[in-house]
Image (tube, rainbow, N blue to C red; front, side, top):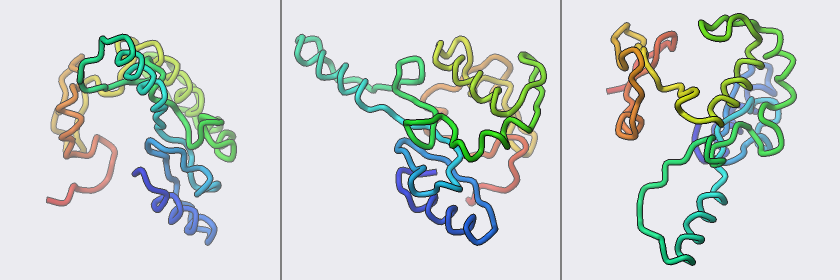
Length: 170
């Protein structure tokens, strides 16, 4: 994923040729570039952050700092577009696939995604996908049980998680 429509457009081209490639938005809504390819994504509502900055400037309380806002702040949104969290073309497929989690039991992939998103909107203490144990795809423990990745970890991820096939080019 990237903040460019190119990956989604190429995914759409392959999908139109009968070779489906599933893509995801990253920061900006990309569904319009891949109506049959863009499943969902992580969007950013920059407005809530700008509102905070401008309000602080107006009130004379602004100090420069690194804004790292999440769903709980209303900055991170789920969707390939701002209109729907999951592209309607994929909802039935995702509802037809069941998964089991230790904390939620058996539910559809669609319901799992929506539940996790609701949990993330409640805060990182309720659910943070970067909480260990997390293993890379070679079996190496990356984050211990209960350990949560910090900003520095996010900026330096150089591994694939368990069940992802491939190697990071070195």
